[in-house]
Amino acid sequence: MNQEQFKNTVFVHKDKLFRFAKRILVDEEEAFDAVQNVMMKLWQWKDRLHQYSNLEAFCMQSVKNEALNRIKRDKVRSDFAERQQIIGMTESRVGNTKEIILEMVNSLPEKQRLVMHLRDVEDYDIAEIAEVLDMGESAVRVNLMRARQRVREQLTKLFDYESARIYSSRKGT
Image (cartoon, rainbow, N blue to C red):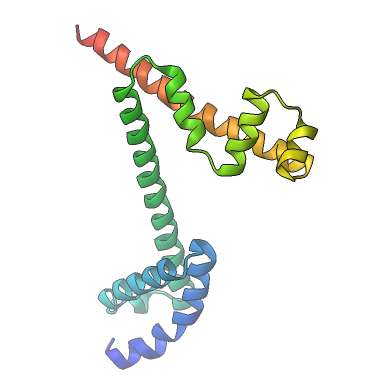
């Protein structure tokens, strides 16, 4: 397949591929990069593309796979960064759970942090919090639930990490 044939059979789908990638990835630049990466791979495979009966479907499948791989890679990176943050907090303050929890609460988004403080520290009821923060009661409940869930998830990861570290140090001795 030469450049002109590639342009007429594969490159004509670039706009559709971009829209599809953008639907999956949301970010326009990330979608553009994904489509560009797929186009480069398709160009490298240009001599094998004739074996696909529906080239457009193959291109769409390739873009979908590229987009999902990018999402997966980003999730792995963010999970690693979060794990490193927890490890750093643990190593710098071993045994100081209250301080660690306060840091976790302070790292919450503002609304969640305020709602959690008013409810769990100041012992306000939901209606009072709604009035103080000028929010609906359901919004207060949702923010409180999300804040508690986030802190619980971080604590679980922290305690799992600590348990694994303790277990591995006992196993090693």
